[in-house]
Length: 428
Image (cartoon, rainbow, N blue to C red; front, side, top):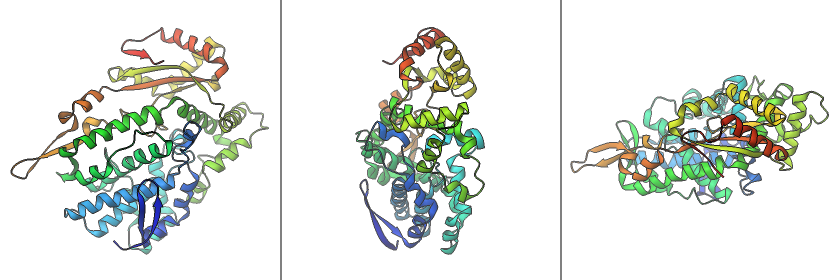
C-alpha cells in the first residue's frame, strides 16, 4: 500500500497511514475520539489508563491491515480489500459517546441504539462520507464493514468476531496503559496463524498456546480491569449522573451528526457540574455524583455475589433494570438509605465492554492441517483443557452504596438474599 506518513504508537511502534486514512483521521468525528477516554473512569484506579478512543482506533486500523495483508498473501483479498479493512478498523469505534461504554447504558435506555449504530450513521452522514466518496469508496459499504455486517463473512470477522482486531488491540493497549500484565498476548503469532476455512476465520491449532493466552487474558482483564470494583464504582456513578441529567443537558436528544459530535467527556462532565444550584431532586443527585467522581469519592461495594453459569436464570433476572430497581427499593427501605445512591451492577449491562459469557471461548474455531493438505475444523475447547475449564466461568452481581452506609446496606442485602444462594459464594 502507498503509505504517506506514520504515527508513533507506544503499543505497536510505528503505525503507517495512506492518504485516504490521513484525511479520515483529520475529520472532526475521528478527532473527537481524542476527547473520549477508552476506559472512562478507570484512571481513578489505574492512573496510567488515560488513553483515548483515538489511539485505540489507530491500533485497530493497524491490526486490521496486518490481518488483511496476511489474507492478501494467501490470495483471499486484494489491495483494495486491505484498504477497506483498515478503514473499517479505524472507524469501528467512531460512534462511541462520552465516557465510552458508560454512555451505552443511556443510549440504549432512551434511544434503543448502540455505538455501532451511531458509527454507521456517522460514516454515512458526516464528513467521513465526503472523504470516502472522494476516494471512490462507498460510505454504505464501509459503514457495514465497520461493524462486521457487510455480508462477506471472513472479512466481517476481521472487524467483529471472537478474535477480531478490536479485541486484540484493546487487550494489549488497555493492559499496557493500566500497568497490569494480563494483556501480554502474542497477537502477531495469532494473526500469522489465522486462516479462512469454509469462508470463516479459524486459528491453526499449532498456535494453541498463544490462543489460550489470548482467552485467559480476556478473563483476567475482565476481573482485574473492566469489572474491577473501583473501576465499576466510577462507572456506575457516571451512568447514574448522566441518566438523571439526560433531559436537562440533552445527552440523547441529538438529531444531526453535528449535535452528537458536541458530546464528549469534557463537555458532558462540565454540563453536569453546571447543575450545582439546581433544585430538582434528580439534578442535585447528578451533580453530587459527578462532583464526587471528580474528587474520587467513590461509591463502595457493599455486597458481591459470584454466580456460576448454571444459575443463568438468576443472572438473567438481574440483567433486567426493572428487577434491579425493585430490589434497590427493598434494600432502601430495610437499610433506611436513599435509593438514588444505591446501584446494583451486573456485567450484562451495555456499559461493560467485555464479560466472559459475552463471547464463549469454546466458540473460537481452530483447525488442524491433515496429511492430504485439507483442514479439519473443531472448537477450541476440544483441544484445550484450560479453555474447557474456563467455560464454567461466573458472573458477578454487586451492590454499591455510599461508604457511610455500607454496613447497613450489606445487612439489608443479606436479609433479602437470605444468606448464600445455591451454587453461589460470597467473594471477600
